[in-house]
Length: 405
Image 1 (cartoon, rainbow, N blue to C red):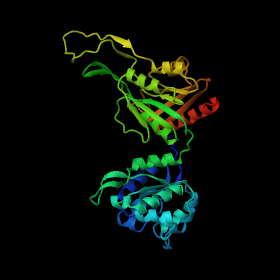
Image 2 (cartoon, one colour):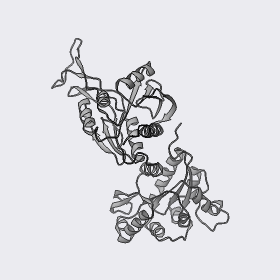
Image 3 (cartoon, helix red, strand yellow):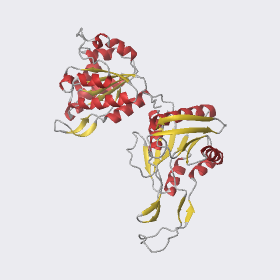
Image 4 (tube, rainbow, N blue to C red):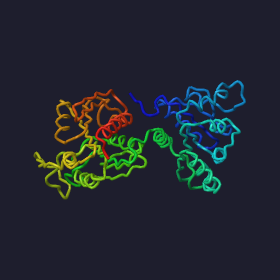
């Protein structure tokens, strides 16, 4: 079950003539993988860079290029596409197309289609840096934004033309993320969402530490989904190898005490706290100043308890929604319910470690949700991004039930 916001949505991808048009193939592939029904409209110039056949094969739909080709059913039905579309993204959008759209010019298939569109639109400009910075082009972009379009700022760097500066088409993963954000209801707008993710590390000596296999995937998915839904998100994260979610305040930490300090400092200003991080329950009583050398006998390592961040947050919370996670190897429900009650949680998401489709490093998870009011919800195996949105659906329900400020 991998139903993201794009699942079965009608998305129209507009492709203009620019060297970045090759990235649109990867963008199309990602949209289709997420379950979107994608139709492609290309300008004549775009066909000089990428063959329409490539888009036809990947989308499994006829590509529209010429409105006046009577043999092309896609050309005849382009207005119907506009009426059925849930979202439109133009990537790359050339300066010429931006100017046409800003002034209501309709002289080819894509610009004519755009005049009939009423759904959310995202424009991804890509061009030479000087063209991008030209006052006329910037004025056109402002007009599109005033008309309700979402303009995704280009990246900076060395361009194909040899210049360096703004004008690079954002990577397809970023475009997909921003499109998801555009189409996702802002039901967390005005809410400060605090998420913890990843492992912590408690040093034994300068080269060894106590930790766990947490990759941070679930916590980062929660943070990304909360931002997509309009939340003001802070992500307190242990050491992981994942790219930061867009528009999220990152607070990197290492130890349990580091994470506790970061969480407690932001607790009062948070409306929702989602504690996904797999923190160390114990740490060495003494941290050696130098590397412990291997000896002949058995070494005993004395451990002490670390701060129970979740319990402390549960004791201090007022009107906040507090969500916990539990990864167990046995007796999952028993331990999850115990944790739910002891930590004063509103909901806990629990899973068994061991199955290949559910655990720290997997891209999917099989969760059971337990609620403070006694409800229990068993979920199918889900992609972690889709699961993150489902969990936040439940958070939004809890906010409404508790009438949280």
